[in-house]
Image 1 (tube, one colour):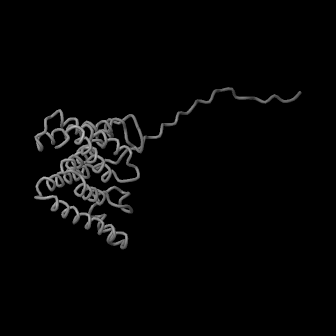
Image 2: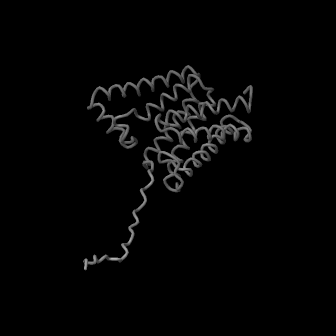
Image 3: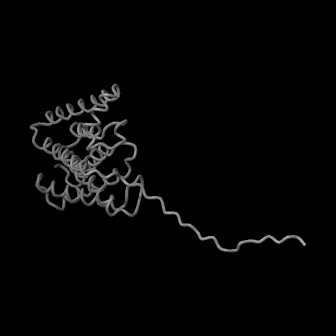
Length: 228
C-alpha cells in the first residue's frame, strides 16, 4: 500500500499587519511662530511704509539678500553649513539642499508689491501667516481624512476657516469695510488659499499661497466692491 501523507489540518492563525501610518507634516512650533512673526512684519511694512515705491524698494532688498544667500550656499558648503545651523530652529530638512522657504516668501512679497493692490497684498500675507500654521496644527491633531501629500481634509478646512475669519477681521478693522463685504472677500481669498496649499507639492507654498490669495482677493474686490 502506498504510504499516506499526514497533513496537519490545524488552521494557521492569520497575522494582521499594522496599516502603514499616513504621512504627516513635521511639527515645529518655532517655525510656526516665525511664520506668524514674518507675516506681522510684512503687514507692518505694507501698512506703514509711506509709498508703494518704498514697499517695492524694501521688498527688493529682501529678495536680493535671500537669493544672494542661496547663491552663496550653492557655491560653498561652509556657507551652507553656517546658514543652515543659523536657521535650523525654523528650517525643514529638505531646505538644506533646496531653496529656503523664506527666499520664496520674500519673492512672493516683491510680486505682490509690484502688481497687487495693497489691500489684496495684505490679505495674501495675513492668510499665509495665520492659516498655514493653523492648518498644520489642526491636521496633526485632528486630521483623519488624508487627501494628498500628507495633507488632510480637516487641516484644509481649518486653513479656510482661520484664514477667512482673520481676513474678515482685518478688512473690517484696518479698512473699515462692512463685515458682509469683508466676509465675502475673505472667504474667496481663504478658499483659494486653502486649495493652493493643498496643491502646492512642487512649488513652495510660502510662494504660491500669498500670490494666489492676493490675486483672489483682488479679483473678488473687483466683483464685490467695484470702484474701491
